[in-house]
Length: 372
Ligand SMILES: [Zn+2]
Image 1: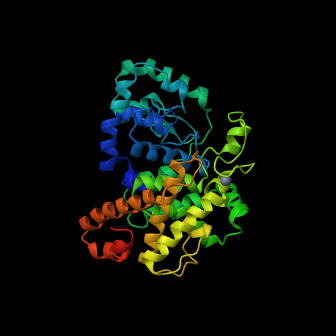
Image 2 (image 1 turned 45 degrees about the vertical axis):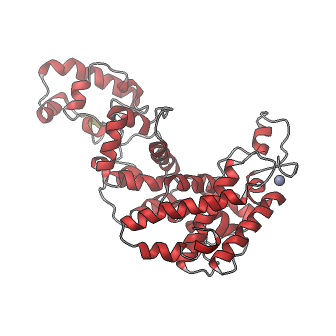
Image 3 (image 1 turned 120 degrees about the vertical axis):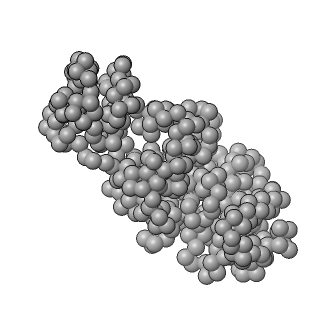
């Protein structure tokens, strides 16, 4: 899930340096617009997109997308559309009246005198105040209580969550009352059989726990959510003449067929698993839980070997996705190059953290076979 990156990015709250940097490149109002509902512009860098999407997904999953809180921006975003449409309020924004919580107290709008006192508003602003009040009362009624923040806003505003931050965010998401995650689990269980609670939690964590590379995190997250357009879906939507698998011609190619049960893809996984087994000198079974979902519980592998398996499978998944509509399986040579690339890349990270020995533990065995 994309939310993992949010913690890196917004974990320090709205004042986090990384967030501030992003504000400067994207423009402050623009980024708030997007966090609160405007479409994501085409030219947004991928990494930023991931975070923005993650934020939205998290707000949706926790049931807070589109709901008002005291953090809801007044002048930007889609939530308070009548207020955001007002003109001539730039000054209000710059003196610190920028969120709903700044003008709504308890169950009613704050008085002009009250605002005047706190923000030293000039008397001439009274007509603007009336304008604002009028626009606001289109969205709210006196007597409405506005919650202080959504669970995700709370996490973003809390400041540095420290090492347990990601798990905290996950716990918020996993225990969310919303149905999307439950449905997702049912979907996977219909494919791979029923899962223990711990396994499902591990699957949800996998986009973050398998790798540090954002690009691969994204792939795992799309995988977890089965978020690819399959021939079956396209056919149903009238965008493809048949629901057939482009590889084996099976009549209904749904997500699980495309990434697992298709005989051609199955043979590909067989080869990948064989190579991984040779590298690790341990027998790795071709099983969907560790390979597709990154659930390593039953693999009986060492920690470092699990890391290698996780990344090696991510590369295979990337290649399956990249050749989504191909008639043949992805090339094994491409997979080897991919694993090599990951090893080099992760080496830099381990080097920077001064723990190259860990890298050696994970990737050391691959030196002969994969040619690292
Ligand atoms: Zn097939």
